[in-house]
Structures are given as structure tokens and as C-alpha cells.
Image (cartoon, rainbow, N blue to C red; front, top):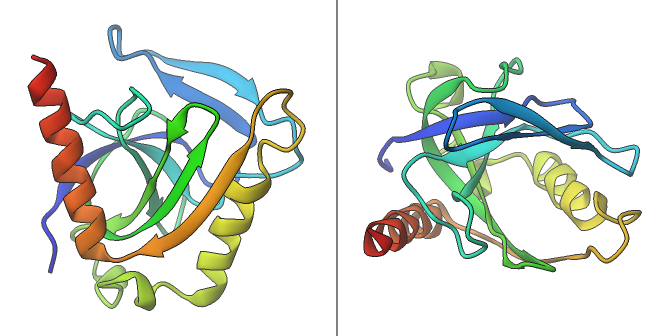
Length: 163
């Protein structure tokens, strides 16, 4: 079983609003409403104390039974990663479950995530920027829980190296 990490939710599942946390003030701001008629397929946020390849904290999608509010912290366990890039560079999305929720213990690795859920997530990220001028996304492949955990550790180290 992989380790637990601290994540903060910015966008609840089912929202078209793209919220972002201001990391200096801790306030949640509405960045934009998605140009496409898509909604986030899972709660979306970031791992605390990380730095992704795009210069922002590493992204995470958390599979939950019910969406939570922006700004809520959750202990999560990574179960896979969607490897992708966009106009700003590498933009991988770790997929995780709540670390202590018994309803999700059966998901240990990427192949345990229902195939349809993986397809929904992939489809969302392939298309959600389609109507935004100058923006694009390239989805590469799904990676394992071990790949996801390694990505988090590398993002933690990237942040530590900057300080």
C-alpha cells in the first residue's frame, strides 16, 4: 500500500468553475469558467509542499463518493497517474483516494480504477480546453500507483531544491 499525502481540493466534482488557491493568502479564487460544457470528473486539487513541472503544485484528482468544498484538505493515497502535457509543459494528474475511507480500499493501483472512470477522466482532459484560444492538451498514458508516488516524491524534492 502506498503512503498517504496531504492534498487540498480546489474544484469539486461536477463543477465547470476553475477555482485556484492563492498560495500566499490561502484564499480560493474563481480563475475562470470552463469554455467547454464539461464538468470536472472528480474532485481536483493539488498536493501540498510540491512543485510540478509546470511551476505549480502537483495536481491530483481525488475519487470520492461526494464532492467536497474548495479549500478542504484530505489525506489521500495515490492509485495512478494520467501522464499528460499542455501548452505550459508537463502537466501530469495523479489520481488518488481518501487514505482512510474503507469504501475505497479495494482500489490499490491504476488497474483497480473502473475502466469507465479512467475513460471519463481521459476524455475530460483531452477535451476540456478545446474552445480556449492558444491552449491544448496531449494525454499520453496511464501510470501505476508506484509511478504516482514517485512523481509526488520528485515534486516534493523539486520544491525543496528551490529553497
